[in-house]
Image (cartoon, rainbow, N blue to C red; front, side, top):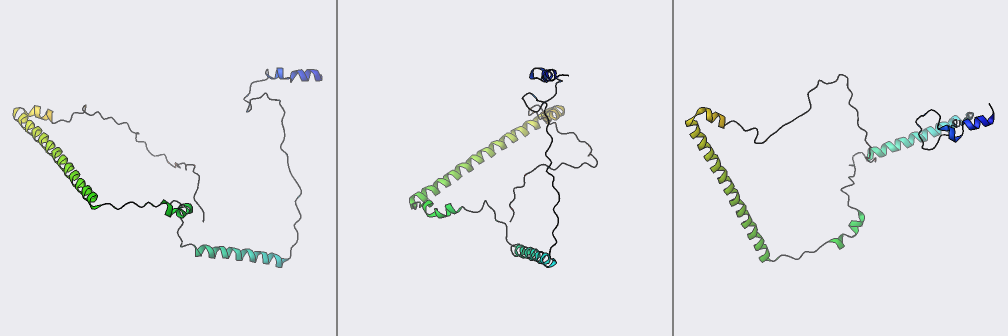
Length: 198
């Protein structure tokens, strides 16, 4: 096969005649493949160290850990700060500028407000009393009508005391009851831990 034939076979015009496959990119494939770069190098020789230096380093690490443990034990009883309860410093600095001094209310205004509150309380009490009396009248007249109906016909009375299901239609479709799946491990949802670490 000559080079011209190879070039014409792999030219951009003939690539479309190749078997259709799903490409990740939107441009035409050039059918080049690359291999990963392997960065291998020989292992370094371990240097022989003086045992006293190694021991001193381990002692330093041990002391550092003990110091960190003591510090944690010292601050163990302190409560974690709540960020929402802390007031920003820029607000604390401008606290005096933000304070409002309201004028003192006169005794006439205070008396008017107290009288208005009493009048409102009386109005709401009378309104409630009227509502309760109306409900009592309705229940009494209903019971009297049922008693009269019972005197006329027991059959009609039993029909009358049945609840009307079409008055307030109520339909519920809930999940069906299924037996639990054996050895089912419920999946733990993905969440992002944003808790602070002290």
